[in-house]
Image (cartoon, rainbow, N blue to C red; front, side):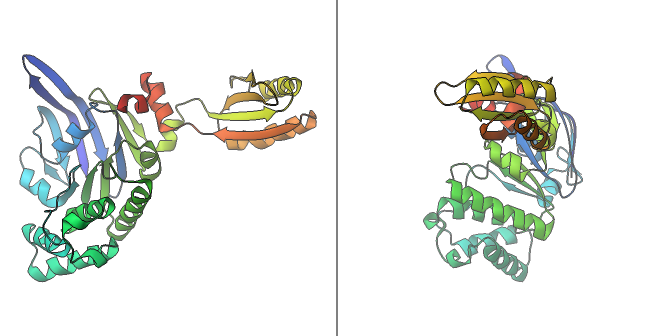
Length: 323
């Protein structure tokens, strides 16, 4: 569905040239759901705009839905859906009419445009609001309408640029439930950008990490998190002596895990260690602690996050960069 090689985009700012995208290679297969992840200014939105024909590449090649973005931009646009960061529907238009008009603009006949619009209204829980003006919709309803407009012509490839930006947590969760259902219904390939790391982790099958205009990592969320050394296992004890004894036991089970005993003060003393597959190591560790007559107060296993991946790859936090 997407095939790029050495795709670049440069901008002139005064007398300087800004290399927003510096040569990205991207391959996305049919039916995949892929997230582009990176801080502001990393080049992900510029990359998305080139793939959707809104910006001409400076150099390199890109084929989207089987068509060249430079020589066949109209054919690319016929085959994709695009939901940008702003709202696409007219403020004074009625919801059903806006979807109907969108279908006609894509060349659907009147009956098909009506039917597809009504189907999407039902699927996206917008049917009760179909006769209302767009300006009266909530933020979550407007985003679902934007997605319906991007899908009314049944594209094989849907681009979502920050689709849940500005939504409350409930509306965000609701939006992604609908995207998952639509993808299951139509088999649509989805490419999205997001600043929410939990969305990229849970919604995407693959994540492309973009920084300074380059793709610096490509893989499933679990594969990328595997680049960070293991899970963090935290053991809490009420006694400092027991915590030290637990650290010795942990050292034997995970000699390369970076075991450390921390004095939390008062009734809390903690032992932390890094291990691959904390869920698999934990049963053996608990048995060893019990055999050593060490009284454990609490245990926690924390998996690496995508922000940990970014920190490992770049030396800085993605959350800090976004702020």
